[in-house]
Length: 197
Image 1 (spheres, rainbow, N blue to C red):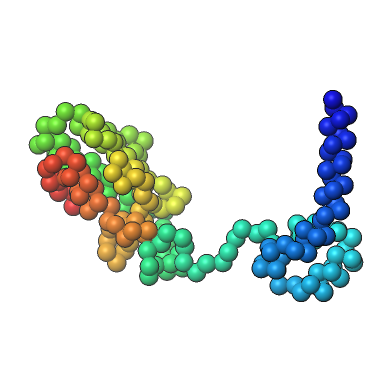
Image 2: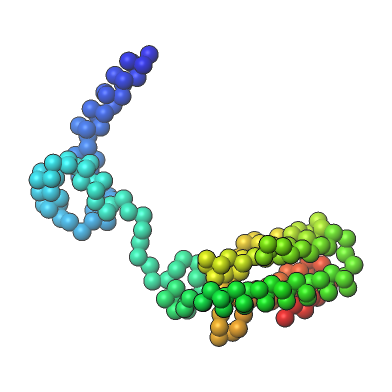
């Protein structure tokens, strides 16, 4: 049985080798993504000893990267080049203040709400807000990225960057403000407005 698989494999390899020049020369990848002309490619194939597949695989034809000027998902008008990196100590100060303020305001809100299943917990730099059957919010720091991450039962995951001009945490994909988003979602879920700012 093993020898039969070996023979079938060798036969398939021979067929592929015989078709390789046809496959490579008619490949839309080579036409669209390399800048070498057909004559240059033919010369390179003969002179390199790589064969057509070797040349194809060593070319940039299989590259999945594309240069872009705007990061995917960024809000229009902002680019990665425009964003200065927040110093680590300043990031920790701002993120800790924000999370601690949210903790205090949400504890007060929970005391006034008297809702079953409302629970707030802060540990290991992670703020967890449970709203019973309505869902759970998680807010945590992401120091390597200088971001605050939010997991929401309403809007899903979001990554907020500090925006110095507006003095708040902004989700660059949508332009949403962290505190305003939490106020809106929690207020709508619980049926009572909440003031977190």
